[in-house]
Image 1: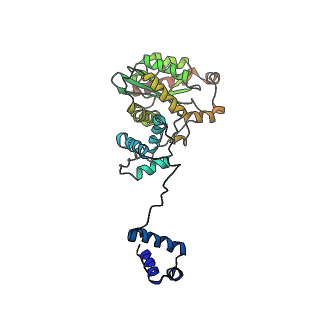
Image 2: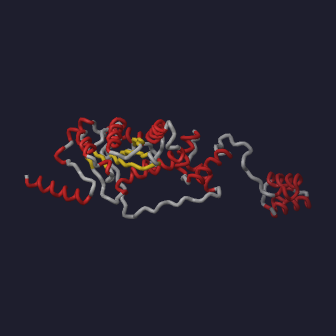
Image 3: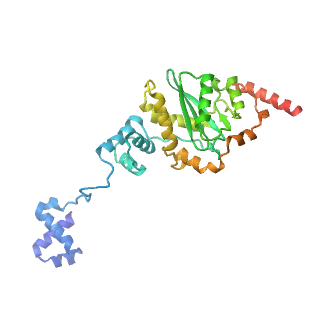
Length: 323
């Protein structure tokens, strides 16, 4: 600002624009601009002005959109990608991650603390859809339990809610899984919940040529995909849905369809589960191929208690070796 004032003052003293431009190293249009602003507003006219355009036809963030982004961060503590999904699902707003991130960093909102992953952890993923399906249950509210099945390869999911965690509910959910998953299920991986170890459930799996592979106790990371997907349900679906609503089944079906068909996943490089299924279509086997490869002699009825099951496994293995 001081330099501009000297330019204007030298021009007022000499009246020679060419002399001022040569001495100060500026162009004639620059000198005329600052002289005109000084004549209009005095020294205040020499201050730098915003170059922001008066109208921005392509601008997408206004006060309402900004308020929605900040509300999702402050009330539900969502990150940029989850905020992007919520704006599209509930408000039909298509905003880029860069746009949302710009709003967050220019606003006084607290930053999210990223979880620290163990260095020894190794994330694996099956290469064929249906090769391993992780199943788990979680309590949403009293009398409301969610069953979740996640394909290890594509993250394609099937969801259902029941009033209790029972073997009957597990059987009903498994029927829904083979009906709604667009590929054959070869293995089922669960924790050691009693609802999965009922004789009727394990016999059903054998009858449908599915291998039952429960994980070790105190190792939820082995079922990490279904655990993380249930966290997503709590943050994006159950945070805005009342478990007592009469149309809960319809809303859950809509959320499942959105998750499988429209929601981009960071672990899938921004693809949706259905995109991965289409890419893996040539490698996905049919039900008759899975049934032909299934070996019933390698399966047995397992018990929920891990140590007891280890003893039974050793006895079974020893008996087969002696035969």
